[in-house]
Length: 484
Image (cartoon, rainbow, N blue to C red; front, side):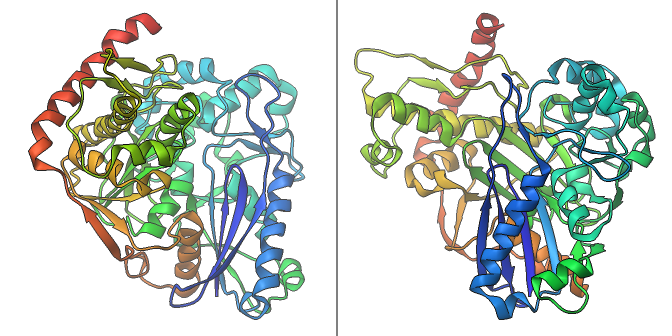
């Protein structure tokens, strides 16, 4: 048996799979986020341990015999969090999370140093780890002086599980300290934030062994024998392992609160000016690119709140047959935009409204606006050297056939829908645990799910969609001057 632990922002998910990758069961532990000031987002690392114990206890209670047979554990987690510990492994302050924006001034300052983009392949975003340490040094110098190790959230869980300070490439690529092409810490970038390699965890690949479960924990959990803990992965790379998006050119689109277009790469293809993330993948000698939009289903949920109709009712009013764009354009920048604009100040808009613009027309525009934002991501990935022939859709928004047809037509590629199942980060983490424990071939383990159906682009609407997309693209520079 193999255990996947996924440390999310709102909870920890524990999933157990057998040697044939059949899911035995899963359980959850809950987490809260603390927001002591505007733009701040924090969690207590002790709460991660409690939520993990809660999830593990739930899983063990349901499947005691199978749980006792665990041989490997894989870790996945929310990226970018700054977990600061002293020489005695004591937590120095609450962890500053990925969605905390307090360090935007420090991020801009580091990004202005050309070495960061050159070595990491990415813009230094406020959510990344390095600017958070620059903020701590400036505002909490007494804490900065005591920092013995900086750990990412899942790697703090590893410290609790194994007693080892170890991270892996995919998560570490989101710190702004990793030389992403060489897959190693950059002394130069660490020095730029007054840190050293000694304050960083050791690095392994996500498929490699990265510690063993402490004997006292194994005894407490009722497990005998050696339990290997894998390097694991950051949440999106772990999800990609779960989805089988590991070979060059494989891609998925995630329609969750935010939207992600994720492509696996056989080589390192950075293009930071496009605001595409170029990170190491969880498998050796593999990288990935990722475009992120900040409001995907969030945009439809906002429209739902304004109209008083549920998301399902709104999409239901459209039917299932794709319509030509109406001339009303929606820009989904409700909380700024990441790829391709890297613009925290820009805000959303409806443009082209007229007397005939009904609720149905506005719903159609919202779905098209998100589809065009994902097309922006596709163009950004293409400009960075990645070709995508088809994508697999996951996330809550993928339940709408109309939306998937709109996305397929906007992107000009088929959209595959996987058969029912849980292929998320916890499943990907369990797969990595299996690989690390058995030495199995990662490509043979990380296979894609069976495709239940495929949504093809509507060729008759290709021209109308292209015209609407070009109109959409022209509006960003027009409203940017008003927002800034």
